[in-house]
Length: 489
Image (cartoon, one colour):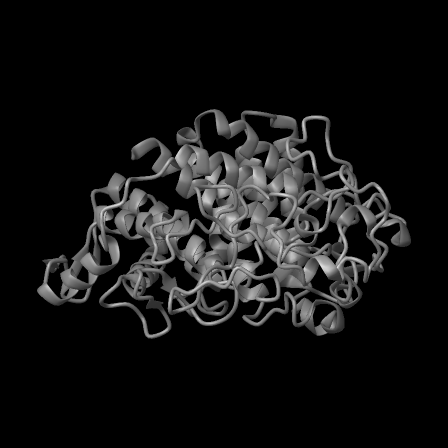
């Protein structure tokens, strides 16, 4: 049912309050895009390349994997600590790849840097999956790491290696890793066909392992991964997610049949108002819906219905009880690091609006309909909030705008760099920098922090880690959003 246009007085008022709180001068989305990609250079682990642009970061963790007899150097630190967590790293890589697949044409000269950022992730994931039926899912003991405040270049905490295998399965990490490798294979299909084929072959093998030996990695690795990146949502969604990306990358019928056959068993329609490193349901539905909207896959119709429900659950004025909006217009969900929800959900709004536009469709939300333009507007409002259109009049991206967080919860940024302070700064020696009221000496340009609370307040202070810590998976969806807005606004 098409229904009425989305213009009833109550809902329109809600939209106006959120989308146009006042007139702002506009944003340099191209500059924000450049900085959001630059952030990933600050998160690099391993030997930094000659073209490293954030010069205060140097080589770190060059012996990762040696205790297990493998090379696990490289990859990304997930946030403000020095642990390499495979689950969020794989999701980050998937989202950077999806950003390039759908919005790469709008990224201009930054496209090359976005592709480099993806390859830094996939090169590591290839190392982590080098042994058949084994995935190395973490390097570093989170408890000993979090007990220290030291830059990665000085790191002397335990670099314990954790893995999943046949006897200790982890279908969510393996499924997400398969998704990341498959999505990246699309990015490199024409740029580097040989590398692309390697990625797709590895994705196929890792996915087969994920579905054959089913289980949650937080069961066998509970002490290591919980409560940091514990699997709260079950592994079923990652199996569908991995299959969806493998279907998109390979066009093989076996993955289409897997999705159709398992959509009920693996709960495709669950928790539609969520999307992030632990919950892929909404992402699966939006990704698969593209084929339905193109008129190529009626057997996936239920996924489009799920996607429509998800979109309606986000819209201000009729949103789901678990999705709120602050007085200043920020989408807020319970739990820490709220900006991860803002960027991921906004990415899906924008992506789905593009799919709808090409199909000349709208979203039925009960008695109303939401146009693709409205979805884009809601997504843009969230991005503009991040960049400074908010009650604090603060950009939540470090280095963007005239006012941004100065004391982010990030070890490398807050401790003097090896360039300025060559002598080692030990585990507890960095504590004085953590508790200092001084701004961080090293600008982690492009880092988007966890963001303000429901009242739009933001304490710029390192101890408030849920609000002041940046993460790779906050930034990854921003690549697509900023790429699109830089070309269209």
